[in-house]
Image 1 (tube, rainbow, N blue to C red):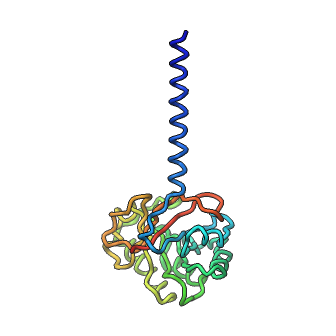
Image 2 (cartoon, rainbow, N blue to C red):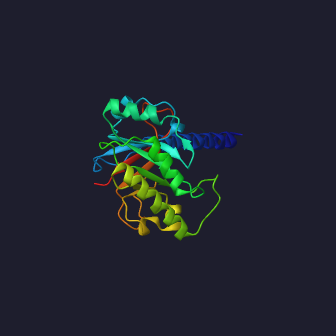
Length: 227
């Protein structure tokens, strides 16, 4: 009987130890940010992040924010105008992003973005988010996708007057070779470890896709600019 009690006690201690380690890991993961060698750090958000207290985000160390404007060829982000105005009030540098769909024509997507975002010479370069989506199972051939992306970029750059920033996932870049084929600044995505998949040196890095900061209910993307 004493032996069983001892075994149960050891098992209980092991469970507690695992629980403590898990909690510590969870806390580290959700609060980690790259070191201060990256002088400029910020966030990118969409309507799924809900209402945001941008003053609190600024106090958390953000220097800039990208806010999604449009998705595909027909969807405007419900919180874009609210976020865009609030960022101006807080003095945070602001940039606009579009979630691209390879299932829709580039011309339609560029027109949607250009008619939603006012030209602002003080804004950061527009960002183009490139990744695969569950609602778009189509996989066109690379030459078709790259031609369409170039068409989108030409139209948006004519509107904004600045080179488009390409936010490219590892999977999308592997399939279409975007960072090799299109000479534009790269925004790479990889949690915790600096990404090495782009064909050209990245200018921005989404370093933690699940960071928690005051002012946002839930996880948020934390980004840094290359030193």
